[in-house]
Image 1 (cartoon, rainbow, N blue to C red):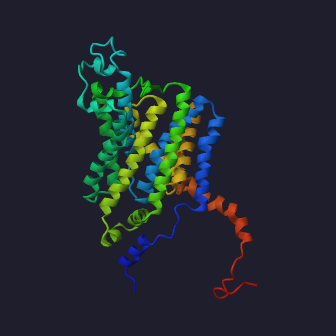
Image 2 (cartoon, helix red, strand yellow):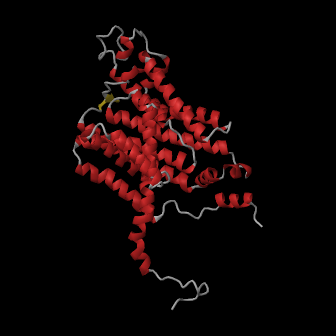
Image 3 (tube, rainbow, N blue to C red):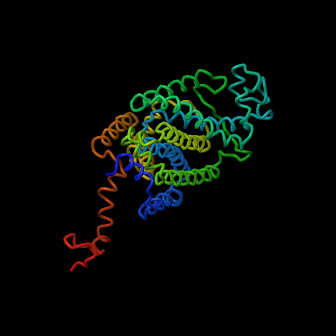
Length: 389
């Protein structure tokens, strides 16, 4: 008789799933076609840049699918990593815009304007690495992931999880927001880091640059989807699911539950950081308003609406919620928060698996019913291998 430990070991070792099923390839091609072809042809520059901003949030939703959907770790502080990635990119852009020639009217030329306003006379040490673009690109991911690693090791090694972990991530988001606002001379304070002009000499404020950044944004998003899909289909992905369902069983099987949780949390932080950096490039500023509790909860709603178990659903959910937010804000600015709350309640009560769940339950069966009807069906009453009459 097979023991529970042996059955779990077999479940996480055997891999009979392809990297992407045909329906998943179709979903990926459809999503890529809409993002990279249809929307650029249909929308003007302003609306396309707006969609580009939406896509930066989709990186966070992708990370939440792995972290929350598969590993069972609900984080209500993903705005922290989105903001850290954005601030790292903004620091490089601000230093490039703060050359001695551009800031010669300041008391101390060569430093960001908000530092000069706060009587800071030299560039702080932690700003120095952001003079280099290659180092900045590394730090955009490394700083948030390192911060996530410290948080997750401190929590998961002590088996802190569930609601307690969600509350702690909220507290960290609130603390970081207060810290950024309070240290105005080093971070720009409540206004954030603004007046960002060029990326390695390339003007990012032009319409042409914003279109190029939109396509870079879309390409990076597709790349992150493929990376997340690889994790999902690998042995690691099956361990994450097993850990979500029966954590003690996985631990008794000899796997390091804390280690896998740390990995999932850090991967989600890395995705969020890439989105934050692209947000800074796409929009042209970064402020503490994207780091706090409210944006972090909104990011969870994106994943919930799209489907917390679906990578493609998370992207569609992000686009849908943000499109609704923009539409409601333009027409009924006082009703958007009520609409957002109603949407979240509907997800919990009516379609808990999000848009992706509705698609799998109601649309896919109808699309493939005809094809299945044409295929020969074996008579269950006959022995295996006997042709049906």
